[in-house]
Length: 529
Image (cartoon, rainbow, N blue to C red):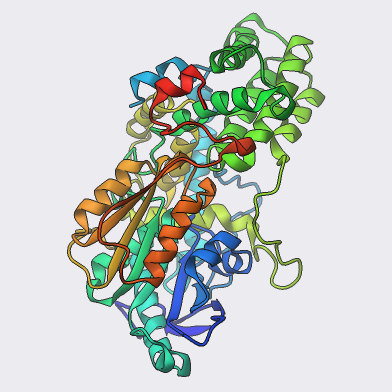
């Protein structure tokens, strides 16, 4: 635990305690310490390091201490986010321009109408939840007002200063006051904020799965961008086709289009709007199946290598039950479990079953998310018109059938979130920094599209871009050997990063290697490997 000011702008207010965990370097050529952040926002850095994937460890190399810390209010930090629920309160649950060549695979399923999510009581519940959280975690000595990314960046300065004065810091080959860092997803927001606030304190920093900071801090409709989410899923039909019926049970016909057509045919039988109008008894079950499809596929597009096999199995369950006209409550439960059970391992390290537990307070994950994003946006959405916010609903649903509704719901609770912070950094983002800056992006990412990485490369003057041909969120999900070799060279060599780099498509779901790049949709539809 590192003792730091609770509020850097008002250092006499009180103290906070930041947990830090590290895995020591494995060689005598000790370069220093390198920090990881898994993203979220709301994910525990401590737990991420305990379970860090082998390919991430290998990419960093043995010469660094591999470390992480808890962002404010998260995990084991003190103060931490509290459970805001009071008896009877029901906090809002957190959910998680296509190219012409992909239009043929555009997902055109039925969307859940906005009336299913919002009525007077639900809106009042959102406001009530915000009021409850302000009461339980919004005081000046509580976590709520101190969870901004700017405060987290200042914590990193405190951590680096303490490390520089330590025995390990004094023996490090590299300057111990400089940040070596690899941040994924929201972790890229931490990296870009730190680089913009403290440009002279960078060593080697990589941002991976890049958030657009300007859209993020303004609560823009595309802050969590799903413009490529349906496109990521469209690759399922191609991979399933080449995997064949043994590996992909949803396989049918002689082309990816045949599999796509079978998928789309499910929606004819799951037209819950028509069923509701006709007064069918199982209209509610139909809607539940659509929601399970959206959430299950929504998880799968984050990591196609891991979860596309699950989708291939789950869709068979749906197809079988639909054809049997069996959409009872028990059938819906069967579908839920079919989409919840991974078909294969992902190569990650085994979780630690003992102390500390995976999450000290899993019921607070929603509040941790809101505590960060609602504060980072400067309270822009608080008390704003619901009628105005509602306009985003249709836009996001048209952008992505899979993820549009979920993204809309993520920021909805900010309308009732009154907790604010003075320590908010709204830019400008970018400029010239000391050290080396690497921006990493996949060609098809479901929530942080490649255009975000390309923008970061432009605004940070000395940044270099690593483009990975592949689908999924962040480099780890692509399992791209070339990419991890490039990242390892970035962290460990002074020679590599003289220009932007590109890694071609490698093995994907079911260990199938397509003839890339994925953006060449014509080749995919021709079904050539």
